[in-house]
Image 1 (cartoon, rainbow, N blue to C red):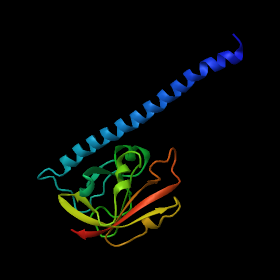
Image 2 (cartoon, helix red, strand yellow):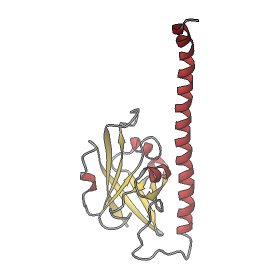
Image 3 (cartoon, helix red, strand yellow):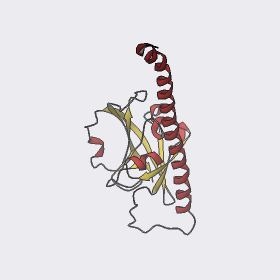
Image 4 (cartoon, helix red, strand yellow):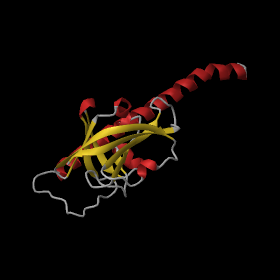
Length: 191
């Protein structure tokens, strides 16, 4: 057999192997995100159990479940974890440390992956309610603006009164590292 013929003969097998590896990586990401949400939900349920009250100046540690995020029109419930590093974002949307906690005065920033937990944001629109539950309190935000920005645009991180920013990569259908960010801006409508 000629060398060229062997290469041509083995090429389809290499493509099949590469496809299987990509499929397995995608399946792993999906399973990690589902397991992360399951674990975060358990932690959240334990934290809101009767008699389990957080101290007034409690600051969560990285990976702690800090809130439940609900988008009623989209029939979505997600558990928000503290932190935005890779391990945190595999578990769920991450509250950006240093920004206001959900329901506190100031700018609360939550980021998530477009291909797992925050994929639902492709369907959000102005006027939608975003509910954050934390420490047995319910905070209702109303979406007022959506924008697509470059990754170096950090205006969503600036201090702002009674504001929630949800951030994810954009476009949703992009393969690889997406070149832009989608920012959902909402204002506190009800404490």
